[in-house]
Length: 271
Image 1 (tube, rainbow, N blue to C red):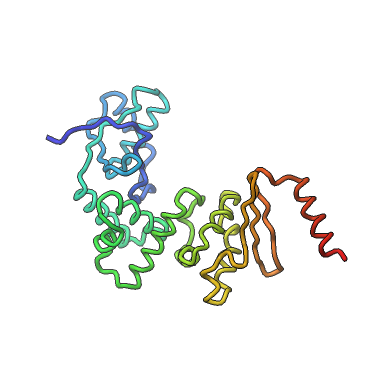
Image 2: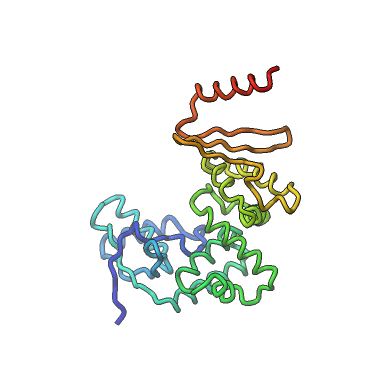
C-alpha cells in the first residue's frame, strides 16, 4: 500500500511542472474548499522530491484549496496529505506535460528551460537525459536551443519578474553572453533593475558583448568593466550608443562620494 505523507504547504512547489491555470473555475475551487473543510481531503496530492522540498505532480486545485483554507483557518490546514512518487513516475509525468503543451504550443521559452532544469533534478540523471526523454524527436539544433534556455533559467531563476513573457530570441541572446563569461556584469545590472525592467537594465551589457569583435567577446573585463572596492562599493562601466555610463552602487555610494568623483574628473580633464 502506498504510504501517505503529511507535508508542509510551504515545502511544495506548485509550479514545478508547467500547467494551464486558466482552466481553473473559481466557483468549483470554492466548492472544493467547502468540501475539504467539511470532510477532509479524500484524495491526496502527488509530489516528487526536489533538492529544496517537493514538486507538485498532480492535485493543483486541491493544493490551492488547502492553501486558501490555511489562510482562513491557520494551523488545521498547514499540512497536506500527499503521495511521494518515485523517479520513473516523475519522468513519465514530465514527458506527458511536455507532449501536451507542445501540441497546444502552450509553453513559453522560459518554461521550457525551467522544466528541463526541474526534470534534471527530479527524474533524470543529467540535462542531456532530460532533453532526450522530453524531446525525443528534436533535431540537434533544437536541442542546442533548449539547452541554452535551461542554462539561462539555471543562472537567473528568481531574479527576473515575469520571465515567461521574454521571447526565445531574447533568452538565447542572454545565453550567448553567459557562455562568453559576461555573467558577473549581467548579474550586477540585474541586481539594481526595477521589477519588470530587467531587460532594459541588461540590454546594454548584451549589446556591448554582441558588438565586440569575436576575440574580444571572451574577455569581458578587459578593458575593465566592473570594479569592486572595499566598503561595499561597486563601479560598473557600460557602453551605449551615446557614449559611456558609470554605475556607482553599493552601501558606499553616497552623494558625497559621487561629488568627489566628479571633482576628480574635472581636475583630470577640466584643463
